[in-house]
Each structure stands twice: as C-alpha cells, then as structure tokens.
Image (tube, rainbow, N blue to C red; front, side):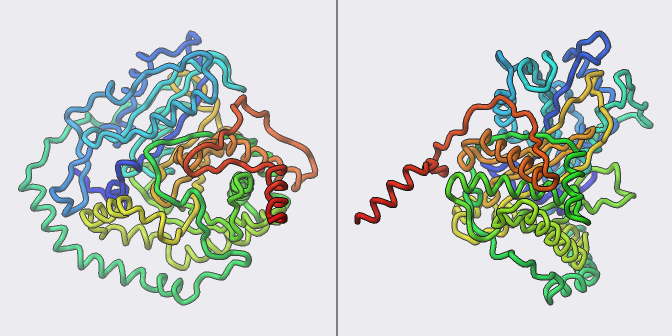
Length: 508
C-alpha cells in the first residue's frame, strides 16, 4: 500500500455532496482513421485493458483510515472490473454540440464511487451535427478524482491510452499485476500511530526549511500591482448547487502566438488570461454586474520535478493573478496582465514552489472534513470576503495528432471541480496546434453557458484585432441564444428600459 500525500488527501476531505472534486476531459474522435473505418465498444475495452499497467491509478482504490486519523492509502483493488469503469451511451438525433455539452455536464455532476478505483470513462456516440467534426464521430468523457492526479499527471494518463499512429500498440508490462489484500484494523492502527508520532518532527523540519520564504512574502516579497484592489464579490462567489454546465471554444495556437508579439515578453499564458478576462468582463457587463475592482484568478503551478514525471498524485502550488477586468482596452489589459503575472511569479518564487505542498502533508483529515461540511452547511461562502473569483489552469499538451483505438483525436476540452466560493473554473488544453478554453460552472450561477462561450469568442476576436489590426473570428457553433432566467441571473435590461427608468426617476 502507498499512502496519499496531504495535498492529494485534501481533495477528499474538502469534497461535499454538492461539490465533488474530480477533474475530467472530453475528446472528440474521427473514427474514419481506424482500421476498417469503425471503432467498436468491444475494441475500446480491449485497447484500454492492454494499457492498465501504464497508469497505476487505473486499478488502485482507497483504503480509509478509521475516523480519518491519518491520510488514506492506495490499494491495488482485488475486485477491479474494467467494464464498471468504461460505459457506452449515445446522443439522440441530431447529436449536436449543445447536446454533447449538456450530457457531459450531467455526467460530470455525479460524484465518483469512493469504494472503487476513482475514474470513469464514457464513450458517447452519435455526434452527427457538430461543426468542424466529421459525421459519425464519437466523444470520450473521462473523469478521475483530483486525489489521484493533477493536470500534468492527467496529461500523462491521457498519453497512456493514446498512440501517435492509428495502429499503435502499447509496450508490454514489466511485471505481472498483483492485487493486494484488504488491511486489517490492527495494521491501519499501527501505521497511524507511527505516523502521528513522527509527524511533529517532520513538521518542524519542513517549517525550518520553508520559513525564510514565508517570511520574505510576509515582509513585502510581493510588489503591489498597479490597478489591483480587493477581490470583488461576483455571482461565482456563493454556494454552489449540485448541477453543472460545461462549454468551450478552441483557437489557433499560431494566432495566440501572433497576439503575444504585440506585448514583448508576454507569454501564451498571458494571452489566455487576457481572453478569459475579456470574456468575464463582457459576461458580467451584460448582466450589469461588472464590479469596479478587477477580478482575481488562481492559477495552479506544477512543481513536478524531472524525477517525479510519470508518477500520479498532485505536485502543484498556486499563484494569484489579477485579471484587470476593469480595463476596457484589450491590448492595455494584456500589458497589465503581463506585468501582473511577472509580479505573481516573483511572489511564488519567494515562498518557494513546494512550500504549500509540503505544509498540506500535516493537514488533519477529520478536522479538514468537518470544516468543509460546516463551511457548506452555514453558507459561509455568501458572507466572507472572497479570495478569488475563478481558477484558470493551463495544461500543455502534445502538438502532434493522437489516436485512440485507431481513431484520430480532433479536439480536446477540460473540466474541473467547482465549490462554494469558487463557482467557475477554466481548464485550458493545448493539442496539435490548437488551444481550447473550456469552463465548468454551477448551473444556478451560470444558466446561459452558450452566451459565456460567445463572450470567449468575442474577447479573442477583439484582442486579435487590437494586436494585429486584422479581423479574424473563429466560426461559431450552432448554439441557442442565452437565457437569463435563474435565481442568480437577473434579466438583462435593454437600453430602452434603462431610458424609461431614468425618465421615471426624473419625474419622481
């Protein structure tokens, strides 16, 4: 057995009934490239079955320590059944983009079974009316608990089930897989006692190593960013429901690289942050909810070393990024984001990339779980000051075509967890010359995901025009107009309505 780190276990402790903490992705495949031009569900089961040895999380399940007195363990599941984890469904006619997003959102909203290995894969047939996708294509939606992987190890997991050619074969396993017996209470109690005796000494050692970085931050290691203020409250900073929405758009990586040349020194990530910033500005402005202060995003940072590549689990830290949604000009916003991320990176370096990762090792599980449940039950997200408005996580992917059971991957989109106080996340994936900007949100907070996807498109087009002087906008998918009904989404007021209201106030 292998024990979870404190960082990995924290995703279990903070999971609630309305906020499961798994992550996911869905990819669309063109099966015409497969041998015979067709992929069968039986062939997918066989293909994945031959690759189980390439990722340990496939067959590992949790063993909880009684009363959460210590972090759980991973166990090679003796009852592992591949057909429980890979499932087969189909969209009804016409099988368009909106239907796919709704189906994926429903599947993503369901929590994983903690008594099984923490992943599920859904093969979704019937994609006959998705713009830019060959008729007869299929999608694969995969979700896996954040306790098992982070974004980078998730990309490595995706590599385990894909090939770089249609007829690719996985390498043979170096060993025969052996399940592990369930540990007894005495064994777990002994391990827990030893760990709890050692814990204070390890905590003191970690604190001694990390104290200089923490002191540097607390005494002014971070430069103040001009234009940044307190984190404002938005519709995404309340309590979340158990329902989700999912959408996304993809763009040319070359176009994004062209944009970044307009601000010397800026990166592809800075451009992505600016596009998301512009989309949030448009969306909240349309709902007459754009705050005066800029929105703030959390950006996860991988701290995975070369030696840790290929391992599961979470090796991440975070940095806070001001999005400058209070700047209307897109190019000036990109300049401000570039300066802001430079300062944020300096602050993260002052603390040390692994500081928070190391400190979470000593998080008491029972206390953390109780705190998460109380936070939700008391609705504290609605009352305390938010410390972020959204998460934007950028995961670099392969720039060559990938194949799944012979079918070529056409596009790839990410999904993430949302929770009380943080109801919107933007997973960013790059693949084969394209970058997808997708998002996951609570349906009560965002009842009009198609409109927000349009805001992303319009934000990108506006930034491209400002950077190059050219008009370029990706072809829009067929999507219904936005709806603004819902508990947290007030009706959009027209100019005529605002004029009548102003006139009425004048008469009064």
